[in-house]
Image (cartoon, helix red, strand yellow):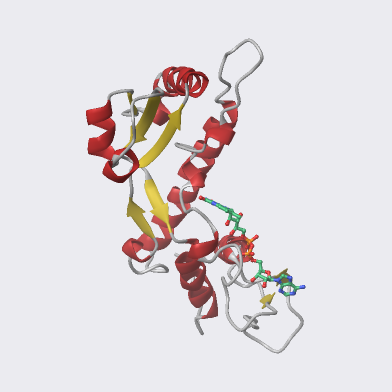
Amino acid sequence: MNQTQNSGAPDVVLIGAGIMSATLGTVLKELEPSLHLTIFETLEDCAQESSQAWNNAGTGHAANCELNYTPQHADGSVDISEALKVNTEFDLSRQVWSYLIRKGAVPDPRAFIHPCPHMSFVWGRDNVDFLRKRFEAMSSCHCYHGMEYSENRAKIAEWTPLIMDGRGDDEPFAATRIVTGTDVDYGALTHLLIKHLSAPRFSAL
Ligand SMILES: Cc1cc2nc3c(=O)[nH]c(=O)nc-3n(C[C@H](O)[C@H](O)[C@H](O)COP(=O)(O)OP(=O)(O)OC[C@H]3O[C@@H](n4cnc5c(N)ncnc54)[C@H](O)[C@@H]3O)c2cc1C
């Protein structure tokens, strides 16, 4: 795949046409529209590997529900610093996408981003204690405003009926939910950005 607009040597060569090259290429072209950009891809199309929608969760960027972003220390405290960093970076991504939508480079945000509640569900006393502490730490920060926590069967069943269907009460369980989560299709976004970069007359806002 060659995005170079003339036959001269490219100013920038990007290897692999996933979301990273698509994003870096887009940002570079916004900063310097005259750049000649070449993207090499071994597969027949862009976004066939990690960026393809079936190959990533499409939620991790917000660090709402991924428990591995909030480790528990030996003293029992829950460290949310990594989650905050990831969540803040996602806000920057959203600002870039908003800009691209406003200028018409990406025609319709519904092609790649959708509202989707993010939930974490745990069972067992230790895990419930962890999730409650995690919730207390996260919900005190504005990034996680509106996050909900419950150990109540009826409430969790309302949020996620299938997970509770047939589940006994022999061990405690808990869940958090944040309704402002999003599902991002990075494969679709890669296609949109590469299409924009491939446009015959690329123009900055
Ligand atoms: C299970 C899982 C869940 C995830 N969940 C999330 C999530 O919820 N949110 C999130 O933001 N991220 C998530 N990620 C991470 C995200 O999917 C990746 O960080 C992202 O897709 C990486 O993009 P990329 O462009 O670097 O890689 P890719 O999309 O894999 O693109 C690399 C491209 O390079 C090509 N290539 C490789 N070698 C060469 C070569 N020598 N020459 C030419 N082309 C080459 C490949 O064919 C491929 O097309 C998840 C990842 C996994 C595995």
